[in-house]
Length: 373
Image 1 (tube, rainbow, N blue to C red):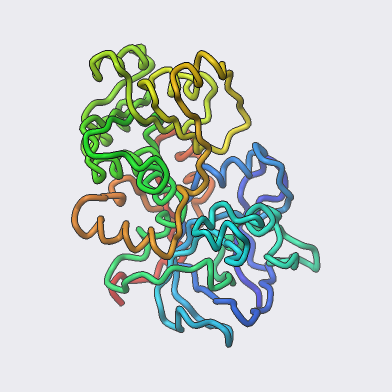
Image 2: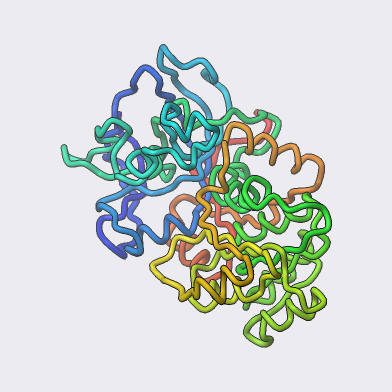
Protein backbone atom coordinates (compact mmCIF):
# COMPACT_ATOMS: atom_id res chain seq x y z
CA UNK A 1 0.00 0.00 0.00
CA UNK A 2 1.06 3.60 -0.63
CA UNK A 3 1.76 5.74 2.44
CA UNK A 4 2.95 9.23 3.28
CA UNK A 5 6.41 9.48 4.84
CA UNK A 6 9.16 11.98 5.62
CA UNK A 7 12.22 10.88 3.65
CA UNK A 8 15.85 11.93 4.08
CA UNK A 9 17.38 11.40 0.64
CA UNK A 10 21.06 11.81 1.56
CA UNK A 11 23.36 12.77 4.42
CA UNK A 12 22.33 16.09 6.02
CA UNK A 13 19.37 16.58 3.66
CA UNK A 14 16.11 18.07 4.89
CA UNK A 15 13.10 15.87 5.45
CA UNK A 16 10.88 15.65 2.37
CA UNK A 17 7.32 14.45 2.83
CA UNK A 18 6.35 12.09 0.03
CA UNK A 19 3.11 10.24 -0.66
CA UNK A 20 4.39 7.54 -3.02
CA UNK A 21 6.21 5.27 -0.54
CA UNK A 22 5.27 1.61 -0.78
CA UNK A 23 4.82 -0.16 2.55
CA UNK A 24 5.82 -3.83 2.77
CA UNK A 25 3.18 -6.54 3.08
CA UNK A 26 2.41 -7.83 6.55
CA UNK A 27 3.95 -11.01 7.93
CA UNK A 28 2.29 -13.46 10.35
CA UNK A 29 3.58 -11.69 13.48
CA UNK A 30 3.22 -8.17 12.13
CA UNK A 31 1.02 -5.30 13.28
CA UNK A 32 -0.13 -2.51 10.98
CA UNK A 33 -0.34 0.80 12.83
CA UNK A 34 -2.13 4.00 11.85
CA UNK A 35 0.24 6.69 13.08
CA UNK A 36 -1.15 9.41 15.32
CA UNK A 37 2.05 11.08 16.47
CA UNK A 38 5.78 10.63 16.83
CA UNK A 39 8.47 12.25 18.92
CA UNK A 40 11.70 13.45 17.35
CA UNK A 41 14.75 12.03 19.10
CA UNK A 42 18.43 12.97 19.00
CA UNK A 43 19.10 9.64 17.28
CA UNK A 44 16.91 10.72 14.37
CA UNK A 45 18.98 13.89 13.99
CA UNK A 46 22.24 11.95 14.37
CA UNK A 47 21.29 9.60 11.53
CA UNK A 48 20.04 12.46 9.34
CA UNK A 49 23.24 14.40 9.99
CA UNK A 50 25.45 11.41 9.29
CA UNK A 51 26.89 10.91 12.79
CA UNK A 52 26.26 7.19 12.39
CA UNK A 53 27.09 5.00 9.41
CA UNK A 54 23.67 4.65 7.82
CA UNK A 55 22.02 4.08 4.47
CA UNK A 56 20.12 6.68 2.46
CA UNK A 57 17.43 7.35 1.50
CA UNK A 58 15.91 6.66 4.90
CA UNK A 59 12.64 7.12 6.77
CA UNK A 60 13.38 7.97 10.39
CA UNK A 61 11.28 8.13 13.54
CA UNK A 62 11.30 5.65 16.40
CA UNK A 63 9.04 7.22 19.05
CA UNK A 64 5.71 6.43 17.41
CA UNK A 65 2.23 6.18 18.86
CA UNK A 66 -0.81 5.00 16.95
CA UNK A 67 -3.83 2.76 16.56
CA UNK A 68 -3.71 -0.85 15.40
CA UNK A 69 -5.39 -1.31 12.01
CA UNK A 70 -4.51 -4.94 11.20
CA UNK A 71 -2.76 -7.86 12.90
CA UNK A 72 -1.13 -10.98 11.51
CA UNK A 73 -2.51 -14.45 12.36
CA UNK A 74 0.22 -15.13 14.95
CA UNK A 75 -0.29 -11.89 16.90
CA UNK A 76 -1.72 -12.45 20.38
CA UNK A 77 -0.87 -9.39 22.49
CA UNK A 78 -2.75 -6.64 20.62
CA UNK A 79 -5.92 -6.40 18.55
CA UNK A 80 -7.44 -4.05 15.98
CA UNK A 81 -8.37 -0.77 17.66
CA UNK A 82 -5.77 -0.99 20.43
CA UNK A 83 -3.65 2.05 21.14
CA UNK A 84 0.08 1.34 21.07
CA UNK A 85 3.47 2.92 21.60
CA UNK A 86 6.31 1.53 19.50
CA UNK A 87 9.87 0.86 20.55
CA UNK A 88 12.89 -1.15 19.39
CA UNK A 89 12.85 -4.77 18.17
CA UNK A 90 14.63 -7.61 19.97
CA UNK A 91 14.71 -11.18 18.70
CA UNK A 92 13.58 -12.71 22.01
CA UNK A 93 15.49 -15.96 21.49
CA UNK A 94 19.22 -15.18 21.86
CA UNK A 95 20.98 -15.75 25.18
CA UNK A 96 20.81 -12.12 26.27
CA UNK A 97 17.12 -11.75 25.43
CA UNK A 98 16.36 -14.93 27.36
CA UNK A 99 18.31 -13.54 30.33
CA UNK A 100 15.96 -10.55 30.38
CA UNK A 101 18.21 -8.01 28.64
CA UNK A 102 16.70 -7.41 25.20
CA UNK A 103 18.69 -4.18 24.77
CA UNK A 104 21.73 -6.50 24.68
CA UNK A 105 20.11 -8.65 21.99
CA UNK A 106 22.86 -10.29 19.97
CA UNK A 107 20.99 -9.24 16.82
CA UNK A 108 20.12 -5.72 18.01
CA UNK A 109 22.17 -3.77 15.46
CA UNK A 110 20.97 -5.88 12.52
CA UNK A 111 17.34 -5.70 13.60
CA UNK A 112 17.24 -1.99 14.40
CA UNK A 113 20.04 -0.19 12.59
CA UNK A 114 20.63 -2.07 9.34
CA UNK A 115 17.95 -0.18 7.41
CA UNK A 116 16.08 -3.43 6.69
CA UNK A 117 13.47 -5.43 8.51
CA UNK A 118 14.46 -8.39 10.72
CA UNK A 119 15.12 -11.09 8.15
CA UNK A 120 16.69 -8.67 5.67
CA UNK A 121 13.66 -7.57 3.62
CA UNK A 122 12.83 -4.00 2.64
CA UNK A 123 10.35 -2.20 4.86
CA UNK A 124 9.74 0.60 2.37
CA UNK A 125 10.36 1.11 -1.34
CA UNK A 126 9.99 4.00 -3.76
CA UNK A 127 9.74 3.20 -7.46
CA UNK A 128 11.07 -0.26 -6.71
CA UNK A 129 14.14 0.98 -4.80
CA UNK A 130 14.68 0.30 -1.10
CA UNK A 131 14.21 3.13 1.38
CA UNK A 132 15.94 2.31 4.69
CA UNK A 133 14.01 2.07 7.93
CA UNK A 134 14.91 2.70 11.59
CA UNK A 135 14.19 0.44 14.60
CA UNK A 136 11.93 -1.72 12.37
CA UNK A 137 9.47 1.13 12.91
CA UNK A 138 10.06 4.38 11.00
CA UNK A 139 7.31 6.37 12.67
CA UNK A 140 7.60 9.48 10.48
CA UNK A 141 4.88 7.85 8.36
CA UNK A 142 1.11 7.88 8.02
CA UNK A 143 1.04 4.07 8.42
CA UNK A 144 3.70 1.55 9.31
CA UNK A 145 4.08 -2.19 9.83
CA UNK A 146 6.05 -3.51 12.79
CA UNK A 147 6.61 -6.80 14.56
CA UNK A 148 4.47 -7.60 17.58
CA UNK A 149 7.61 -7.27 19.72
CA UNK A 150 7.87 -3.61 18.70
CA UNK A 151 4.55 -2.55 20.23
CA UNK A 152 3.32 -1.86 23.75
CA UNK A 153 -0.41 -1.59 24.41
CA UNK A 154 -1.35 1.60 26.30
CA UNK A 155 -4.60 2.82 27.92
CA UNK A 156 -7.09 4.46 25.57
CA UNK A 157 -8.01 7.18 28.06
CA UNK A 158 -4.58 8.79 27.71
CA UNK A 159 -3.68 11.22 24.93
CA UNK A 160 -1.75 9.19 22.35
CA UNK A 161 -0.03 12.33 21.13
CA UNK A 162 2.07 12.63 24.28
CA UNK A 163 2.97 8.96 24.65
CA UNK A 164 5.26 8.20 21.69
CA UNK A 165 8.50 9.45 23.29
CA UNK A 166 8.06 6.87 26.03
CA UNK A 167 9.35 4.40 23.43
CA UNK A 168 12.87 5.83 23.42
CA UNK A 169 13.87 9.12 25.06
CA UNK A 170 11.95 8.79 28.29
CA UNK A 171 12.52 5.06 28.74
CA UNK A 172 16.23 5.55 28.01
CA UNK A 173 16.71 8.23 30.67
CA UNK A 174 14.55 6.64 33.34
CA UNK A 175 15.73 3.11 32.60
CA UNK A 176 19.39 4.11 32.84
CA UNK A 177 18.69 5.10 36.44
CA UNK A 178 16.09 2.56 37.53
CA UNK A 179 17.28 -0.52 35.62
CA UNK A 180 21.03 -0.04 35.32
CA UNK A 181 22.48 2.30 37.94
CA UNK A 182 19.86 1.34 40.56
CA UNK A 183 20.66 3.99 43.19
CA UNK A 184 19.68 3.38 46.77
CA UNK A 185 17.66 5.86 48.78
CA UNK A 186 19.99 8.61 49.91
CA UNK A 187 22.42 8.29 46.98
CA UNK A 188 23.42 11.27 44.87
CA UNK A 189 23.23 11.65 41.09
CA UNK A 190 24.20 14.28 38.53
CA UNK A 191 22.81 14.50 35.00
CA UNK A 192 24.82 16.27 32.33
CA UNK A 193 22.44 17.59 29.66
CA UNK A 194 18.83 18.37 30.55
CA UNK A 195 17.07 17.37 27.35
CA UNK A 196 14.33 14.75 27.33
CA UNK A 197 16.66 11.89 28.27
CA UNK A 198 18.34 13.87 31.03
CA UNK A 199 15.07 15.11 32.52
CA UNK A 200 13.70 11.57 32.48
CA UNK A 201 16.81 10.42 34.35
CA UNK A 202 16.28 13.15 36.95
CA UNK A 203 12.63 12.24 37.50
CA UNK A 204 13.65 8.60 37.89
CA UNK A 205 16.34 9.56 40.42
CA UNK A 206 13.73 11.43 42.41
CA UNK A 207 11.45 8.37 42.30
CA UNK A 208 14.36 6.19 43.46
CA UNK A 209 14.90 8.41 46.51
CA UNK A 210 18.16 10.19 45.65
CA UNK A 211 18.77 13.06 48.06
CA UNK A 212 20.82 15.07 45.57
CA UNK A 213 19.67 15.23 41.94
CA UNK A 214 21.89 17.73 40.16
CA UNK A 215 21.18 19.00 36.66
CA UNK A 216 23.99 20.42 34.53
CA UNK A 217 23.35 22.35 31.30
CA UNK A 218 24.15 25.64 29.57
CA UNK A 219 20.53 26.67 28.89
CA UNK A 220 18.81 28.43 31.77
CA UNK A 221 15.29 27.62 30.59
CA UNK A 222 16.09 23.90 30.65
CA UNK A 223 17.60 24.19 34.11
CA UNK A 224 14.46 25.97 35.32
CA UNK A 225 12.33 23.06 34.08
CA UNK A 226 14.79 20.61 35.66
CA UNK A 227 14.10 22.22 39.05
CA UNK A 228 10.38 21.92 38.43
CA UNK A 229 10.69 18.23 37.54
CA UNK A 230 12.76 17.17 40.53
CA UNK A 231 16.32 18.45 40.43
CA UNK A 232 17.47 19.52 43.89
CA UNK A 233 20.21 21.68 42.39
CA UNK A 234 21.08 23.00 38.93
CA UNK A 235 24.37 24.23 37.47
CA UNK A 236 24.92 26.33 34.37
CA UNK A 237 28.32 24.99 33.32
CA UNK A 238 28.83 27.93 30.98
CA UNK A 239 29.17 30.15 34.05
CA UNK A 240 30.38 27.78 36.77
CA UNK A 241 32.92 24.93 37.02
CA UNK A 242 30.44 22.05 37.17
CA UNK A 243 32.81 19.54 38.77
CA UNK A 244 33.85 21.95 41.52
CA UNK A 245 30.24 22.89 42.22
CA UNK A 246 29.15 19.23 42.37
CA UNK A 247 31.93 18.53 44.86
CA UNK A 248 30.79 21.52 46.91
CA UNK A 249 27.18 20.33 46.89
CA UNK A 250 28.19 16.87 48.06
CA UNK A 251 30.53 17.85 50.89
CA UNK A 252 33.62 17.37 48.76
CA UNK A 253 32.83 13.75 47.91
CA UNK A 254 31.29 13.90 44.45
CA UNK A 255 28.18 12.06 43.30
CA UNK A 256 27.55 8.33 43.52
CA UNK A 257 26.21 8.31 39.96
CA UNK A 258 26.37 10.47 36.85
CA UNK A 259 24.53 10.26 33.54
CA UNK A 260 25.94 11.95 30.45
CA UNK A 261 23.39 12.62 27.71
CA UNK A 262 25.46 15.12 25.72
CA UNK A 263 28.13 13.04 23.99
CA UNK A 264 30.44 16.07 24.18
CA UNK A 265 34.03 15.07 24.99
CA UNK A 266 34.70 17.63 27.73
CA UNK A 267 31.33 17.00 29.34
CA UNK A 268 31.71 13.23 29.33
CA UNK A 269 35.10 13.62 30.98
CA UNK A 270 33.62 16.00 33.57
CA UNK A 271 30.95 13.42 34.43
CA UNK A 272 33.76 11.07 35.50
CA UNK A 273 35.66 13.73 37.44
CA UNK A 274 32.47 14.56 39.36
CA UNK A 275 32.18 11.03 40.78
CA UNK A 276 32.74 10.01 44.36
CA UNK A 277 34.97 7.08 45.27
CA UNK A 278 33.29 3.99 43.80
CA UNK A 279 31.01 6.09 41.60
CA UNK A 280 29.60 5.15 38.20
CA UNK A 281 29.07 7.24 35.07
CA UNK A 282 26.58 6.07 32.44
CA UNK A 283 26.97 7.35 28.89
CA UNK A 284 23.89 7.19 26.66
CA UNK A 285 24.39 9.66 23.78
CA UNK A 286 24.67 8.81 20.10
CA UNK A 287 27.87 10.71 19.33
CA UNK A 288 30.88 10.68 17.03
CA UNK A 289 33.05 12.07 19.84
CA UNK A 290 35.52 10.23 22.07
CA UNK A 291 36.80 10.83 25.58
CA UNK A 292 40.17 10.45 27.26
CA UNK A 293 40.08 8.18 30.32
CA UNK A 294 43.07 7.26 32.48
CA UNK A 295 42.31 3.64 33.44
CA UNK A 296 44.41 3.85 36.60
CA UNK A 297 43.95 7.36 38.00
CA UNK A 298 40.41 7.88 36.71
CA UNK A 299 39.03 4.39 37.27
CA UNK A 300 40.99 1.70 39.09
CA UNK A 301 42.50 3.79 41.89
CA UNK A 302 39.09 5.28 42.67
CA UNK A 303 37.19 2.05 41.96
CA UNK A 304 35.01 3.93 39.48
CA UNK A 305 33.19 2.73 36.38
CA UNK A 306 32.06 4.09 33.03
CA UNK A 307 29.13 2.23 31.51
CA UNK A 308 27.52 2.44 28.12
CA UNK A 309 23.77 1.99 28.45
CA UNK A 310 21.51 1.31 25.47
CA UNK A 311 17.81 2.21 25.64
CA UNK A 312 17.96 2.32 29.43
CA UNK A 313 18.43 -1.46 29.67
CA UNK A 314 14.66 -1.45 29.25
CA UNK A 315 12.04 -4.03 28.47
CA UNK A 316 9.45 -1.76 26.80
CA UNK A 317 6.48 -3.99 27.62
CA UNK A 318 7.36 -3.64 31.32
CA UNK A 319 8.97 -0.22 31.55
CA UNK A 320 6.52 1.84 29.48
CA UNK A 321 3.45 0.79 31.52
CA UNK A 322 5.48 1.51 34.67
CA UNK A 323 6.26 5.02 33.46
CA UNK A 324 2.59 5.57 32.64
CA UNK A 325 1.68 4.66 36.22
CA UNK A 326 4.31 7.07 37.55
CA UNK A 327 2.80 9.71 35.25
CA UNK A 328 -0.69 9.07 36.64
CA UNK A 329 0.74 9.46 40.15
CA UNK A 330 2.24 12.84 39.23
CA UNK A 331 5.80 11.53 39.64
CA UNK A 332 6.86 11.50 35.98
CA UNK A 333 5.56 14.64 34.25
CA UNK A 334 7.20 13.95 30.90
CA UNK A 335 4.54 15.85 28.96
CA UNK A 336 5.94 19.13 30.32
CA UNK A 337 8.94 18.66 28.02
CA UNK A 338 6.84 18.32 24.84
CA UNK A 339 5.67 20.69 22.14
CA UNK A 340 3.37 19.70 19.27
CA UNK A 341 4.16 20.39 15.59
CA UNK A 342 2.28 19.59 12.41
CA UNK A 343 3.81 16.76 10.39
CA UNK A 344 4.37 19.24 7.55
CA UNK A 345 6.55 21.31 9.89
CA UNK A 346 9.00 18.45 10.56
CA UNK A 347 12.07 20.43 9.46
CA UNK A 348 11.22 23.28 11.83
CA UNK A 349 10.58 20.80 14.63
CA UNK A 350 13.93 19.15 13.98
CA UNK A 351 15.70 22.52 13.93
CA UNK A 352 14.07 23.55 17.21
CA UNK A 353 15.17 20.29 18.78
CA UNK A 354 18.72 20.70 17.53
CA UNK A 355 18.98 24.29 18.78
CA UNK A 356 17.54 23.44 22.18
CA UNK A 357 14.51 25.68 21.71
CA UNK A 358 12.21 22.67 22.16
CA UNK A 359 13.14 19.80 24.44
CA UNK A 360 10.87 17.17 22.90
CA UNK A 361 9.14 17.99 19.60
CA UNK A 362 6.15 15.77 18.82
CA UNK A 363 4.85 15.54 15.27
CA UNK A 364 1.08 15.31 14.99
CA UNK A 365 0.60 13.01 12.01
CA UNK A 366 -3.16 12.50 12.35
CA UNK A 367 -4.62 15.93 13.03
CA UNK A 368 -8.15 14.47 13.24
CA UNK A 369 -7.29 12.33 16.26
CA UNK A 370 -9.22 13.27 19.40
CA UNK A 371 -7.97 12.03 22.80
CA UNK A 372 -10.26 9.60 24.57
CA UNK A 373 -11.98 8.36 21.40
